[in-house]
Length: 236
Image (cartoon, rainbow, N blue to C red; front, side, top):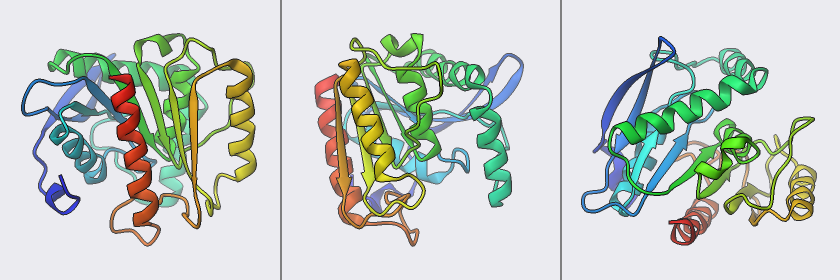
């Protein structure tokens, strides 16, 4: 599916509950037999049309895609301070971050999402993906992908060799996450024996995949999407 064709959502809104809290996800199902499932973790502004478009694009490629909600139904911050507050809430409570992410996977399964699971995330969502890759639940995922996401490993956490492959897609001109951070993660993954690929796109700023934004860079978006599809072929 082309990006232009993805404008009209083809999937469905899914309301679900976690420990009595209301959340609002989005499911796009493969039109025919599914190769597997992609779990999508949103950026710091919550689940928006951006993640819905990505889910629709994936469904057209033959996988079930479920965009999870980590903020709660109706909580879609607009102001920068509000976005920072929502991400800080989860960065400071990693157990909740993991629990809500896995609850999204449970809901995807309950909705009929099929097969092995790859988890992907954008910006804040990329940091969540790596949190899962370091967790005891890593074995539930067949692969991991982070796009212009946070890369720092909290004290006391680490990676393992028996984790599914990790794709790190990073902009060379990212002003929020440095190339030093990328190199540090690469050394960490290498030392742990974790399978990984790191791609760095010259001149690409932070959030280079976000359609229609001033940060969007088509070259980096298209190359990182192709790399992600290769990961899907390997993992699924």
